[in-house]
Image 1 (spheres, rainbow, N blue to C red):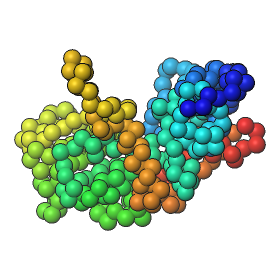
Image 2: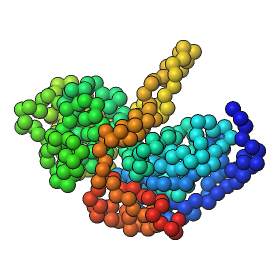
Image 3: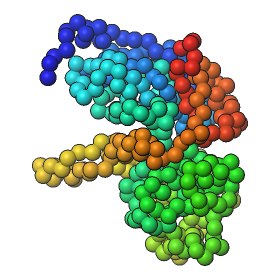
Image 4: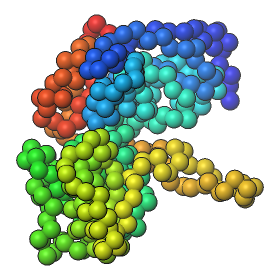
Length: 350
């Protein structure tokens, strides 16, 4: 490999200033200056194109107690500066990363993926939310052709339904919101219900997997009642707060009597990066797997590029110049689209 000129390395070591969204207190979001550290040899830095809002997580942060918080979930950026040890990436490449809401990204090159040339940035960034349920797809005992019910048709649930449908499962989605149901149907999922179809003899007792993306204890209980014996109910949605008067006994009774495998849908159950099998790692427990969070992202980006995951008409691009107003509108459900993306090219002030 040809060494990069020393003068380039001297130039890119200088610290830089960026603009980023900061949560400074309860329901307080501002755009502030952020100092980027000197670029490390394995890092890549560049201008942000878009960042994706994760409503559940970010509203939990906004309503929390620990501040300041620099939020962010996923970003697409263009590589402009490369550390001396970076290989396989060129200036001008568009890259996916799990980056914050700011107009510059600086990331270790091991934790970025190239975006397919034909894939718009605002669609590519959805790979992060799709990755939440990708772990369940990697770990479930259900097999293609089995019935899968997704509870909750919001951003995570919509993408979960797309992934399982794409993988050959018989998918149904349950959501009480008619707007969300229409959006799910527009994505090609035909079996959509306002409530769990417990009285449907074609479904009840024949579901291999319920993917709860709602975080609602009522949906979890219904899921435990609709799965077949030894079926799985996976908790992908975060139960941010109590929503019903359901007792734990109700869920325990359903789990015990229906032999339900109720488990966490923790997205980090698989490694961030895959590692090759090495016999020498016997004493370290063989933490080797071909599946990883980033291998999931890579598959999703390819499927998005092939238009096998439908997202047309479901993305709202907004300016990050007034983040407080953006979050207020989102909280009031002022955006009909399920996916809200900050487009860092929309404001000349940044």
